[in-house]
Image (cartoon, rainbow, N blue to C red; front, side, top):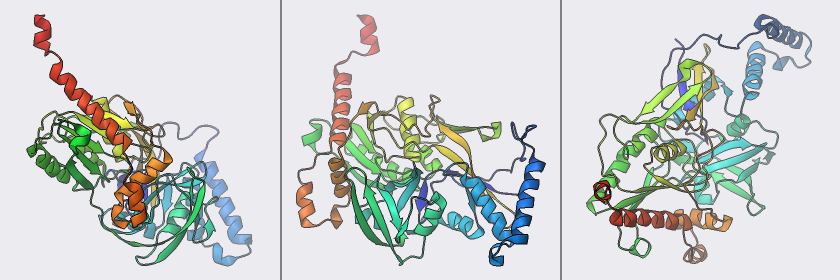
Length: 438
């Protein structure tokens, strides 16, 4: 039986794929709606491919490049690469590497990359990783990898070049579009261990006034994230938290089931938070929160998002927005919402194929559109740089720390103001019974 593993589109260079969770499905038959027509005959096309391979093996000048395995793998790579940036043929070692990457700890740089308009773009650096500590930021473009230009590289080739052994050094030439600055970075691949729930606290009264507003930041969605978040919420509730700000800015995603479980901290058990649809009915899957989830007080909730919020972050933000459970503050999210099915082939290689898209509860597509905020709060490039500096304060120079002392997180302030407005309104508005009596 062939295995099919659902994974999301976000690619973590050096390791962690953002995955739906390894869900084993029966491989469906190759034929489907629209798979063949009179002018699209499978047998005739295969005959063309076979004849081309025969000619290459017969006449090509270099006999070291014409074995059947090499030619077949090259054809498969070209075939998958022609579909979209996220479909991919993986040789046996690559497939095994992808499976190993999803186990938690991994070696790498800790950057998530995608391809847009021919550019190799960093979606987000993961916190506490070599790329994060070096100061690489979301939206940066990788121009060269170890001196080799990326402008003509396929995404899969770039990822292969970025991968390597722990302890090895790699040089990246980075363009920051916001400032037009080009800078070389030398990074050392390392074992990456990411704590996903950070900075749980009550915000300072200078921002929140008489209200107790909690703050929690999630850096990605992995197996323990929902439980970690639940523990932090328990602590904040014991301190009298009246409202919460959940920060998903620059969160690249992670395990789909973890994102669904995070939603379960804020909505009733058994609530549908996301579903997938593809070309064939078998690609429709509905994801609901656990029926055994803990019911929490329905305190006001705001979620911070930006262009670096992708995949699982968009699922959480889109679901809680659609369900009228949260106010979204910030900027439109990245727009990475397609599903890849990975099928292992007989020789141990694999095919990753885009088969479906994610939809929010109100049937809004996420892919290439993103999730828009209720309250728009755009940061300038300088403010984004300061926010990134604030999150790696432990690695800053004294001069940078001095610059940071004047920084105001305007998106956080807007979220706090929104929640205060909600609570003030709730305290003065008449209840439905009072309104009816009048």
